[in-house]
Picture (cartoon, helix red, strand yellow):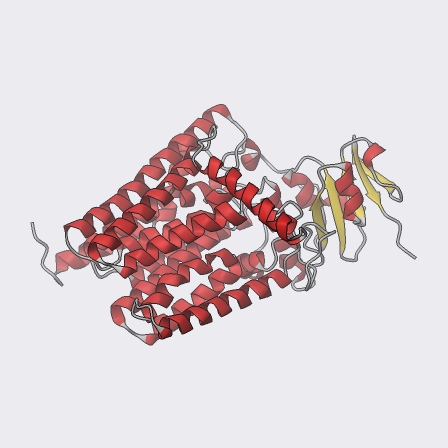
Amino acid sequence: MKIKTGGKAEILLKLLIGIATAAIPLLLWYLWVRVSGCDILQSHPSISDELGYWRIMYSFSECGLDFGACGGFINSPARWGHFGSHGLSPFLAWGWYALLFPWTQASLVQANFIMLTAAMTVFVLLVHDNIADMIFSAAVLCGTSYIFLFLCSSMLEIPCAAAVIVFAALMIRWERTGKKLWLILAVVQAIYLTLLRYCYAVVAFPLVWELCGFRLNRKTAAAAAVYALVTFLAYFVSEMFIADYPEDIMVFVENAGLMGKIRLLLENSAANIKRYFACADHQTSEFYQRMLFAALTAALCVYAGVKKSAKHLSFAIVLAGMMLMNVFFYDIGYQKEFRSMGPVLVFVLIMTVNSGSAGRSAHVLKAFAAAAAALSLIVAVKQISGYSQRQEYNTFFLPERFSPVASSEDVLSEYFGDEPASAAIKVSETFDTVAGIPPQIGVQWAFSGKDLRDAQTEYIISITDDSIIPDGYELIGEPYPGYQIYKRPALE
């Protein structure tokens, strides 16, 4: 049965598809509950990055701009302000929630859910011209395992995915209407994305090239120069607020000589290439995403060559560029590239199914993108099902993430002064401990005695023996059996 264009049936079908698309976060939440038996909207931070994000925004929620120290690695302070290794990103992602709502253990995951739902709704409102493309888009947005898996976390991944979805919607709207308003909003969103995590400046490449008519001429060269300059400025501003992460490959590279830089990058790249094609135990979703990255890049290159489509070539360049950045300058494995490459994959999948291309080959490419995304969801659900049965340690399913939390703030608060300070924790990364420390106290993770010596923090919280506590610190209390708090006397 053919649906009449502009008829009531078409309007009703678009409305139903739109509602289903906007409700995708709710559908994924329900799937999580059914598979794992846990309400992810009541989860709390479990791993160090999540705990760090939670502490920063907790202090900001309670004290505003006088949030004290952000923690991170205090022996590598940010160049501007008391920021940790996450810089401005937490404030750009969750500042609005911290200002509007009371801060609770589940605040970050709930803010992420709201942001993703809002992004899906914006996408539906801006991209609703073609029923087939709407169906493909819904399949892509619902099926991407990256979104599904991180829906339970208190990480930046969902805010990044939400921002990418909004950028894609604005870009598609500009392409279809030609109105400058949508172009301006898309540029603003691209800058926001770059500040959120500067590697995502890569998703603006298709927009820049399209503005130049997909040609290679002086105008394109000038646009590329402006694009590079804006990206560099966003990177420079972001770096001013970020404390160096001591184990980051780029920190080692910066501190090495010329030959040392080359050697480190080559060694890192060789190890990453080997890991790229390896499927570690219990990392099927990560491996699948890497393979989908490579397969989609190849498919887009073939389509671009056959159809002479510069637009599809630009999408392939985005994917290839992100892969190369991760291989040469970051890490493959340990879910690191899974987190950084995920939003870029979401962007390219959305743009591929909304490219405006017609014909059988275009529909085959769109169907491939939608089917690949749907398959990734099946892989992720199976992965989560396995974790829920075995209760294994994993970022996406930590039993601790859903365990009851006993507030320890009243117990710990009496040991800290009223002034902003910093504390190093040599302790199991439990939410009880982190939540029990008063606001304005920056928390730094210390994993060894050397870390504690390097930290130079005012306080040390430890459940280990006192033999690793650096000289100059005094025991000021034992709030729990075997749990000590040390303080460094004020420097004269």
